[in-house]
Length: 77
Image 1 (cartoon, helix red, strand yellow):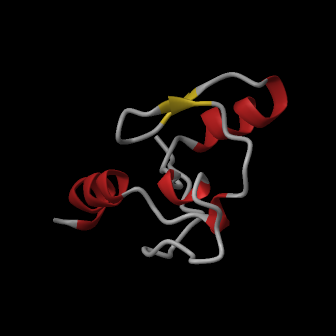
Image 2 (image 1 turned 180 degrees about the vertical axis):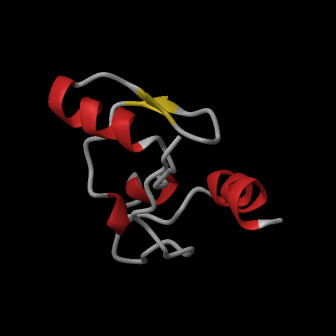
């Protein structure tokens, strides 16, 4: 199962609107993300969030739950 890692920042950008400050970039399977961009189908993030990606994830902080789960699943041995 492959995951996409598109965002490395961990703090919200002060230039974002108030609405965008509550948004996060999430880890999700690459195949799901690709299909979502083509077909508009929802994806399931590592943290369990279900949504249809439509924004540039590099503009948002990484979801703390996704980051923690990714680290515990793939970085610790």
